[in-house]
Amino acid sequence: MWRLFFLGLIVWLAIYFFKQYIANIDSQKTNKTETTSHDNIENSQTTEDMVQCATCKVHLPRSEAYLVANNFYCSKTHIKNK
Ligand SMILES: [Zn+2]
View 1 (spheres, rainbow, N blue to C red):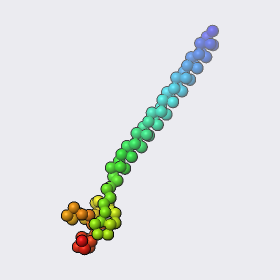
View 2 (cartoon, rainbow, N blue to C red; view 1 turned 90 degrees about the vertical axis):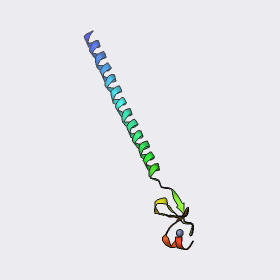
View 3 (cartoon, helix red, strand yellow; view 1 turned 60 degrees about the vertical axis):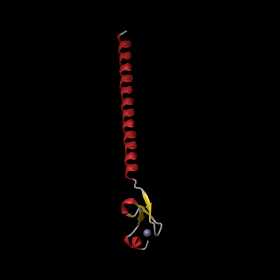
View 4 (cartoon, rainbow, N blue to C red; view 1 turned 60 degrees about the horizontal axis):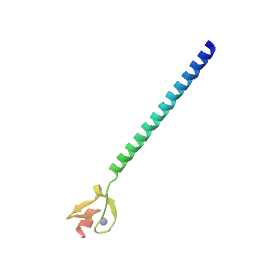
């Protein structure tokens, strides 16, 4: 009778620790997906607007463009040529 009790206890412990192990893996997966989605948000925030040069129609990042009279230019020479 005691043997059966101990066997049941061992099986219960095995199931208990197995469930905790599975829960740990699940929480690690959740953390990873949260990090990935956070990275995606950061990437979309760092993606810069592209603007077009009014003279040569080339596309360039907004931070590299010259803004003169609501028109974007890729270089100072193109501002003079407008
Ligand atoms: Zn240009």
